[in-house]
Length: 109
Image 1: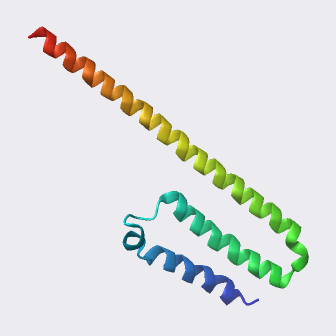
Image 2 (image 1 turned 135 degrees about the horizontal axis):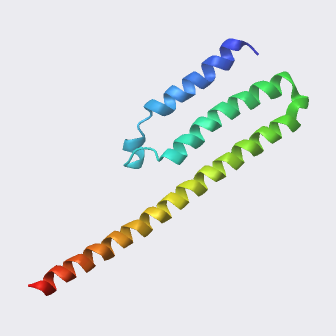
Image 3 (image 1 turned 45 degrees about the vertical axis):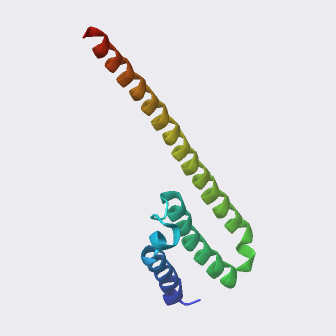
């Protein structure tokens, strides 16, 4: 494979993903975890294609590369889930605090 292909394919795909009209298609910007998935998919997909075209016996090594990427992706999604749960918990606590404060203000009048 030519180095130019190894550079031009991911560059073209990343620009395409960056400038794609996600907002028009989805009604909102592309969620960050999906943007990560797209980017990592472009990187690993291109590398996998090139490596298998050049050295098909490297499949075992590629399997570990994909396992590592999938594990990191799962950890990223778990972190987003934890962040969302903590944010919801803090929002509920803030609402309860405001209710308690407004309740105290109303009883002092």
